[in-house]
Amino acid sequence: MTEPVTFIIFGATGHLSRTKLIPALAHVLEDRDMGSHAVIGIGSKPRAHDDFRSFVEESLATSAVDAAARTRFLNGAFAYHAVTSDDSYRVLAESVARVESEKGLPGNRILYLAVPPSQLDTTVRGISATGLDTGGGWTRIVVEKPFGKDLATAVASNAAIHETFSENQVYRIDHYLGKETVRNLLVFRFTNSLFEQTWNRRHIESVEITVAESAGLDGRAAYFDESGAVRDMVQNHLTQILTLIAMEPPVTMDARSIHIEKVKVLASVRPIEENDAVLGRYTAGTIDGEQVSGYLDEPDVPNDSITPTFAALRINVDNWRWHGVPFYLRTGKRMSQRATEVTVRYLRPPICLFHEDGACQGHQNTLTLRLQPDEGFELLFDVKQPGPGTAIRQIPLAVSYGEVLETAHDAYETLLAEVIDGDQTLFVSSEEVESAWGLYDSLLDRSDVNAYAAGTDGPESAQRVITTYPGDWAAI
Ligand code: BG6
Image 1: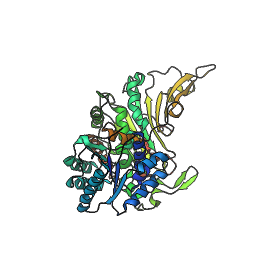
Image 2: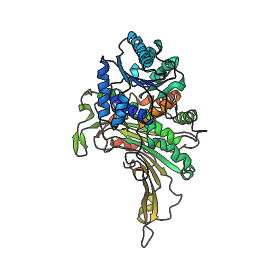
Image 3: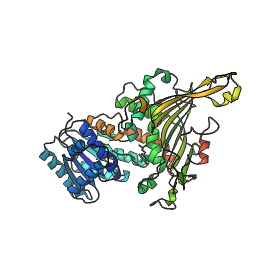
């Protein structure tokens, strides 16, 4: 049985809380057989405690949480507070202490900040000024992405947090790090010596990382228009995948050793120049047979917006292992389909001995790690086409997770469980988040954004980012 915890959620009635956080919390508490708990929700608008409880009930009703878990979760203590002034933090702190004492909770607190970056510093100061950070047990603070909106704001937020919390109390979320297939990247690399021996510039020509989405804004226009593809996806999710693919083996698998290796990758990235990146924005198009509007016609998007919904980049990791191997990163909304993939292209043999059917041009071993959906891997390799002559054919060696492994866990459940256990391995360190922003600062204010039709895989000009092979990005 895990120790009882008080969950204090800022931004508790937002989209993330309703769709991900609350269902994941209910699941984890059930899985962990946790004793009593309390959930205190905080938002900017006044609400009755019972209203918040109904909100939680509704969010569980549409989730996969089963009836038993739902009831058990709802049997815990729930309270709601609106924070609008300094004084409301004081009222909140008193109420948390009261709930803990009534329920006999030991004061282990998880402060979950699902608030926009602009509210982070004020929230942390409110917590600190009223002693919410000390409940008599341990306290951990979880901060949702995006952490900052550029390097300067990320540095300021880290400083504000560190005034009250030590780094080992801070859990910066990137939910991709909680995905099974992303967690598998280090296992794949560091347990399969077949791959690790060849995971370097002597064998690999290039690496592509694609996070394509067919979805649009999902009602989050106000947030997205302030962010755009670089802040929303590249600085965090794609960069996390990049570091896991490129990092050296850590000394041990503990959080500190892994964070050190990830930061070393970021420190090796050559400054991104204008030609290394192409930005895009979708116009109207068709996805799965349905007509969808262009970005500028989406509700709540200003029609003079310059926000990119797509980014393609060439990243050069200038270290001993990767010098000369480009990492191509690509992400976009309203693309032809949803697919997160890493494609590793191996170098061709030095001399081509088989000339029939243009075999020398096309073929190279290609490893694709499919992170979602249809999780699995595929290795393309050449075989002789049966029959006369020596025509070469490329065939896949493919594994689908669904056929051989259990269904993957939800990322938020994994991450919440790690916070409860006090393990920071799957979270982003302060140094890491600042290094990641440092890479992309030059892209944040660019206004050269190229059009692509919804349902395609980005603007034509994104091809120019690729310099190692003629033609296209890997098909998704
Ligand atoms: C979020 C972004 O972090 O990740 C969203 O803010 C994006 O814009 C989402 O749609 C993608 O997550 P997933 O898990 O669906 O790949």
